[in-house]
Length: 143
Ligand SMILES: CC(C)(COP(=O)(O)OP(=O)(O)OC[C@H]1O[C@@H](n2cnc3c(N)ncnc32)[C@H](O)[C@@H]1OP(=O)(O)O)[C@@H](O)C(=O)NCCC(=O)NCCS
Image 1: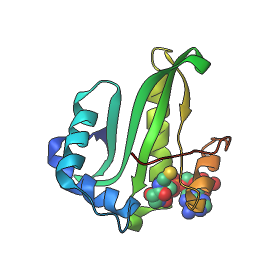
Image 2 (image 1 turned 120 degrees about the vertical axis):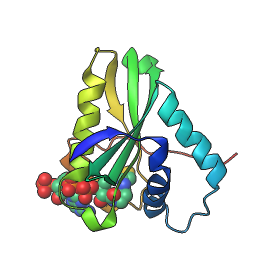
Image 3 (image 1 turned 90 degrees about the vertical axis):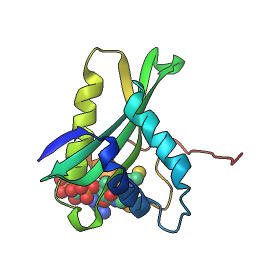
């Protein structure tokens, strides 16, 4: 097992995992692949995968930005998915810990945040077990 950066060769598998996160969503593949490219290329966007014998069993994505309130940078965990057949084995927690260790390097990042849809009750329990507190309601408007 290793946690490693996702590469172009992983795209099909990454899309399959994202589909588990967004069941029923009509994915626009070209647009999605363009954004995946950004996560691979740009320094403020990260995408890591949990690789077991060449198969990605989970992925985590992160973006980094400045935040006045924290007088520093905030890391935002954007997507976390563990393959449905491999949940409950500690993979999600390992991916989160990996990101926590990485953001701690350099001291610029002061806090990690994420938002989770209200209906994802199980995920909320997971985040609390990982030491995250529930503290805001997110608003969204489609453009
Ligand atoms: C949420 C998710 C990433 C968790 O990954 P996982 O590998 O199954 O979780 P882990 O095995 O690392 O669990 C870590 C802790 O969270 C708890 N936990 C995990 N899933 C849970 C669930 N469905 N309900 C309650 N607690 C849960 C575990 O019991 C464990 O706690 P413990 O150490 O006290 O036993 C995974 O279930 C998933 O991909 N779900 C669908 C996508 C999703 O909701 N992503 C998050 C969007 S915000």
